[in-house]
Length: 134
Image (cartoon, rainbow, N blue to C red; front, side, top):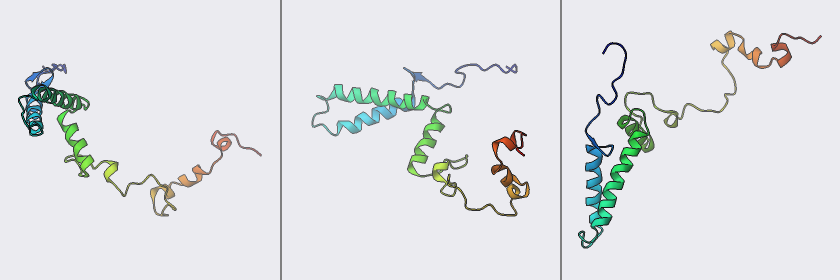
């Protein structure tokens, strides 16, 4: 289709209840890990099933919060661990050199000084509107 139309769900993976296979398997593994907390996992089966389904649906909900789905979740996790995500510039949270604080002085050779933008900052509102007081 060269008309620019987008076919919804064309590249969509297999899903059940809106959750992909990886999310179902991750939920199952979480319930297996949670079963080690009980002496008799068979008696705690309703709790383990709830853990399985809640983990699966929670992962699917988190994935759907980002427009690029799995990549967005990966980038969020990497930033929270302190790593810059691959393929994009590091976010401001990981850039200590980028500060919101003011600099004390602008260099004389900078483009800002050469264009005379410093004078515009100190101009009064009446002067900027073209009305000069005499």
